[in-house]
Length: 354
Image (tube, rainbow, N blue to C red; front, side):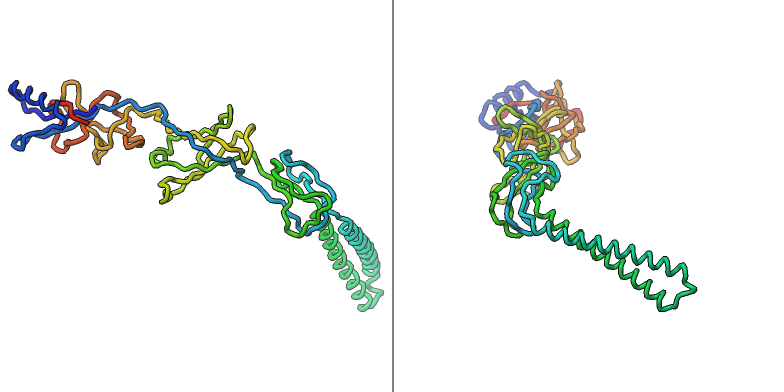
């Protein structure tokens, strides 16, 4: 409720009091221009609501997902799982025809075995030459050393070929890169995949996110906002992951992303309701923004109609109202005409039109 009052400098005639009461009943308060006394409007502070909230709709998306594609291509000979099944890191999803890769690995492995045997023989020869170094020529010694070095180089090359053949063979089995859920599997047995062709998608459902649009009041109170994801009878809390620094001009809303970690009954792609709440826990009272001065103080009208200047703690704002600590519900605060007030002045409070 909004009131209007005047500072009273001592005792006033009764007729003035009656006249002021009559003025309060008008649709607006008019004070004669000749009356130079300071006018002040006061407002009764209100108790803050426990929670103000609204519900919006959204769709859950995975924070992390991966599309599995054929690295080298090949014909599908086996599919491991069906969409919707859970996977672990490295779980095989698609097998490609690997007969050629198997053959190449076998050849490379044979060459590696030959290189190892050759190195062993060259090292044995070098050991014998070194044992009789004083009895062999420099040319014979150098030849043994060169043969050993060549054998070592051949072994390195053979090992690299085995590693490459093994990698190529492993590429013929498409695996899950992390644990989660097999979201989709588009290939069929017998289908020929080209290099780079996508065949499956895995999502990590341990963390999901949903995008919402925040209103200006909600952005102003982000530190006291709460978010709940609802689907059917399931309600799980969410936390703010990211909020845009500026509103979108077309909608005057702030895009924001909420993170959901308790996902036992939720899945990516699931439509959900998002309850956006602003809690006023720790807030004593709510009143108009015009009551606060630049020093973070308000004029409070006491029970004896005396005004006093009070320091308050601004918690935030919501719906054009200040959320503060330091003023209790029901106390009257001056919202207009406080510029000339002095501590302990007496104010006559009159009801004014809204």
